[in-house]
Each structure stands twice: as structure tokens, then as C-alpha cells.
Amino acid sequence: MEDWIAFKCLQPLELTEYFTFYREPLMKNIIQTAVCMLAFVCVATASIFAATLNPPAMFSTSTFEASQAQAKTEAKLFLVDATATWCGPCKKMDKTTWVDDKVVAWVKQHAIAAQIDVDAQKETAATLKISAMPTIIIFKDGKEFDRIVGYKTADELLEWLNGTLQGKHAIDKVIADAGDRNNPAVKINVQARLELARSLAVNKKFDLATDEFLWLWEHMLEHSEGYSAVRMSYLANDMTELAVQYEPAKVAFTKVRDAARQKMDAGSKNR
Image (cartoon, rainbow, N blue to C red; front, side, top):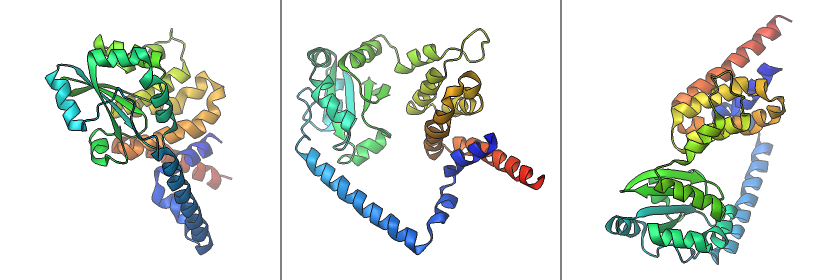
């Protein structure tokens, strides 16, 4: 059963094989219809959000490059919020976090802030390697210092922002919460280790993320049997996303999948 799960969950790593199942004309028609419907929904959604494209007042109205130059001239941090018209959490932050008096005051004192639309400013988004929204990045002296991903309340954002002033990175707390998995005296917190793996991937520490995801795949159920569904869904999806970005991860994860396939084949032959 374990081998079958590994094979099926990690099978999408080889997408060219996966999509050969959709060659039948009838299936093609179904997919084309679904794509058209999805496109219609996306256009409609974009139209709904079009009226709310104006960023909160705390963000600079200058170009990304001009805002970055201003931060350098004024010896301030450069704060970037990568968003999209269709991003619900982004819009929620626009209406709450980014208009919070404490956040506005912090930015006014310490930073120049710019908001970019990843669809309208694709080149900038690609340069910043944005893969999810919202992504919030802090630059110090022209270099990226840290980034976080996902919706943040005003208090959560301020905790991170104040930490950057002290030279702290968001991942430092994640590492501390996860503990040392090689220390027998430390009780393994599976959720904390999963957050660590994801944070490593977000921070482009792909080699460490690969190692952490492999460990989770092999050992997470030893420490928490309740994570079986998470392993088959969210973990497998996270591993697939990392494999797309990082070739060594794809190689490592594919070996796990192929080993599971070989065991399945061997079991079938012995029956």
C-alpha cells in the first residue's frame, strides 16, 4: 500500500507521461470546454477587481526602479508587495494590513514601499522570482534581505518588519520551532517541519528544502499518523512544485517514485 501511495502521489513529476491519458478526442473536447469556461471566469473576476487596482496610499506612485532609487538615496529599506488583481489575500491586506496606522507609521519612518502587479509587471515579477501572492520583500542596501509569503495581519507584519531591523530573518523562527530532527531528545513537530520545508523553498534554499521534503516523505507518519492525508496531497504537491523549480529535487523525488514503482512491479511478479 505504501509503495502504491508513493507512486501515485509523486507520479505528476513526469507530466509528459501523465497527460498521455488525455489523447482521446472526447476527452480533448471536455478539456477545451473547461479551459474556455475557466478563461471566462478569470476575465469576469479580473473585471470585478479592476476597480480596486489603486494601491493603498502608503505605497509609492513612482515606478519600481524610481522607488528603489529613492530608498537608496534616503538610506531607507525598500519594501515590495507583489500582488495580483485576482489575489483574495492581497486584496484583504490592502483593506486591512496596509492601511493600519501602526504599519503606515512604520513604513513612513523606515522604508519606501512599492506595490507591483505580477501580471502587469511580469518582467519585474520574474526578476524578483515571485511564485505566490502576496509576496512581501525587504531590501537592505539594494540587496534582498528577507521575504515572506501569504496573508499577514498588521501585528504579524510588524513583528517581521521589526525583526528585519534587528537583522532577523523570518525563517529563523521557523527553524527554532522545528527543532533538531537529529536530536533524539527533541519531540518532532511535523507541522513545524512542513512549514520549515516550505520556508526553505520560498527563500530559494532549494538544496535544504529538498532534504527536508525527503525526510518528511519518509518519516512524517512515524511521528504523526494523522498526517497521512496531508502527505498524499499537500506534501506531494509541494514536492512537485519544488521539482519544477529545482532539477536536483526532481531527480531525488523521481528516484523515490521509481523505487516505489519497482517494488510494486516486483510484488506483482511474485503473486
